[in-house]
Amino acid sequence: QVQLVESGGGLVQPGGSLRLSCAASGSFFRLRAMGWYRQAPGKQRELVASITSGGGSTNYADSVKGRFTISRDNAKNTVYLQMNSLKPEDTAVYYCNVHPPSPYWGQGTQVTVSS
Image (cartoon, rainbow, N blue to C red; front, side, top):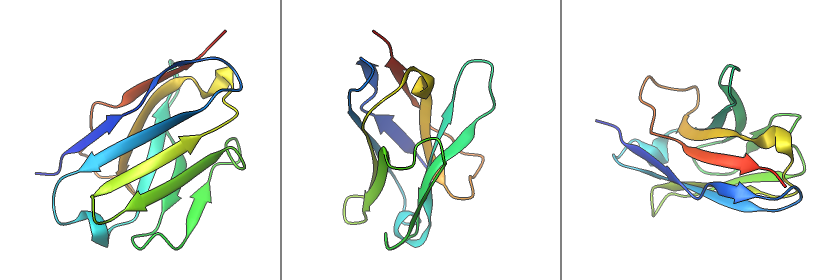
């Protein structure tokens, strides 16, 4: 069974930075595109960023373009999301999953941007 464990969230002031990590179990990881998703209270889960299996291509939601960077280390079965210039509207629970997403979600990591 696929396991995805997100970490690195927390409380940060506007303009601050966080780096999220997602450790994945299973041999699927290096064969699949991965994505970071987020869900804010009262809103649907949305795709924030995605990266191809080899890491050679990335895509971002318009709302985070230029501020967030997705990367991966296939040797460590880990995908990262570097988040800079954080805004209050980035507040959400952040999840990783394959892209397009499977039904298997981790517990997510809470990111709160507030002064």
